[in-house]
Image (cartoon, rainbow, N blue to C red):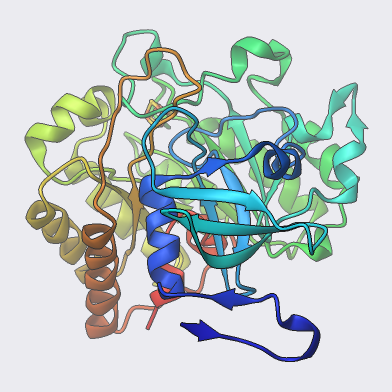
Length: 381
Ligand code: SF4
């Protein structure tokens, strides 16, 4: 047992399992959340926005040390449970097989969550992810129309319940929202969105939005998550607009599995387009500002490690994410079963490769900077 006992912080404890392991388990296995604890989480995402891949979940700070965004499971089997800790206003305990292993604090919804902007709840526009402000600029994806969407993607799931006017958010709307947020309290802004069939593959939508934010917030770091464009000049345009970091998510390295699990992305954006886009983005932004996610649990560990080594050799930061199951979505087709030890092994491998190559993240915006869904920042050399 490791125990931090010092004055009024006696409640902070980590028992039995080291913190990194607890975070890895929460990411891979999710947790059951009791009714009292669930009340604390309900204000974290009041507009029930789903930003695409794997980021929806409950956000806590483990033992005052590690931030994590983990999936809730009511039906799926998991040994982990989150229960209210009556001693602290926002306190919970993480239990494993019935035994408390770690204390945690549920991240509070900020005061600005109560506001509306142009008649929309502000949380339908921006939500806080740790010290990031995140939004889906294009809350849809052209791949759904042809049934070629990535099998784990949920970006279109919140759309149906919401005002269709928020499907494509303008720069003016985002700036109006930012004007109601104490942006100095945040490290950066993270923009994502689905693909289009235009040559920018969605970047053409991002460019005016980044320009508008940059004009009004000249020093705030802005990260964009997107698929590589068919024409690399779109990356030049995004850099000229003032983007600070780019995330282009390969998701899977194995060719056969790419075809099966991310059919549209694989067809329109094969791996060689990613590699070319990484190179162009690095020319503009420099090493440390370009990253790519991999979904652990979709392919053999060896091919995943091969992909990680390849991107690191090119100066790109890999962010391995545990495949996540969404049991609140009827007929959700992606049912990953990620072993937390393998997950940790992959992240440690990525950190070692980065260390060997002398590559460090300098991102202040984006998913790696947020660090709640992966462990790479926690292990960064
Ligand atoms: S490219 Fe894939 S992950 Fe991205 S929005 Fe489209 S379906 Fe979702």
